[in-house]
Length: 144
Image 1 (tube, rainbow, N blue to C red):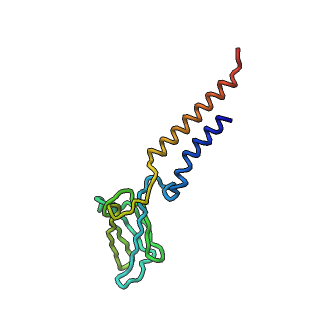
Image 2: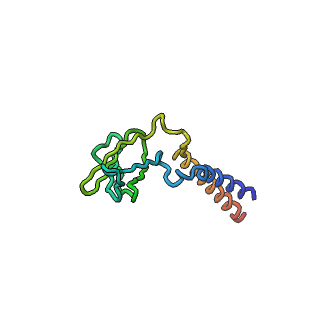
Image 3: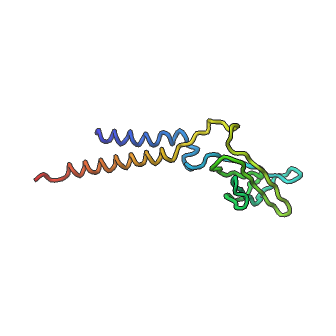
């Protein structure tokens, strides 16, 4: 009974932070979700436009590619702070945007779970599982 309580507490220690930060539970290494909206020169949304996103300092190689939705919006995950650039292309039109990610203007309410915290908790759970397995093996061993 005592072992079950220890395993339950260890599991809850791992699951509670994930439940509190469900937005980043699926992608632990993403720090910001960025939305860019592209429009033509007359203000119409660039629907289904091909988008290339460039990270700060990497202006030649796109790190994210995709297509805009019907409203001309494109969402991507920015893994670092700085000025990101995005370019949308439709036949005959090109739209470019610079996006500042991070800095002082960002709210501090966006918290994320450190990958080191997750790895540490997984290591603790693994140690508990090995310890439990060894105790069970010791109690099942025939006494001679």
